Image (cartoon, rainbow, N blue to C red; front, side):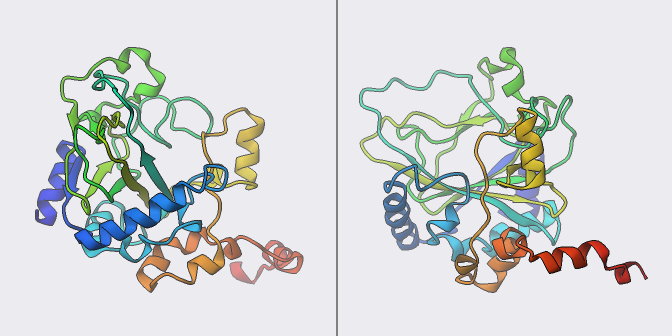
Length: 282
């Protein structure tokens, strides 16, 4: 697909599939590494900063075919705001997924102080990408999307009547190494794995520089405000450890610098200087 075709698909359907971003060998190696990390236990893999625990996909996160779309949609200062590892194990004798039950992820929910409330604006705030380390098929519960729903102006999370089946529901099928790219407003859900093998993928969220993510950052002021108001979003996005950040190639560092722990830790002297230094305004 050309860049123009990708952008048109995102505008009309709300998603497209970028094939062969990873070679079969790269996908297979990342699958083994990711699965091993996830099987260490959910107690250690907390929140959505999977890069702190596993870096196997890091060299590819600034892949040119992905970044040309990210930059076109979100601007040249776009960044990565979350990474997650996902393992969907087989479910013995499971029935096919019934239609309906779709959802939209943060920040598009319509309840709580850290979500967008009311009518959703017709603007792209984030691009979600699912990096397939195994094939996505109907049998193994590949992601189900409802094309065009990114223009609906509502999130089915807050409207039970919208949880009904949508006539446009479509199950995304693609080979390992492909990347599903979709507008963050697109209604979607995960399917049930009825195969004999795991389905493993990374979720990587790209956003413009101006999207406020601090309500998801543990111990930030805004996180405390939301917690006290009872509006804390499900899950947290801990800071990226400095020693992990230093492992990445420069193009990937540019996407992640805003997230590094050392960028947010200040000494008392630095904090006082930030408060009282008036030279910035002169």
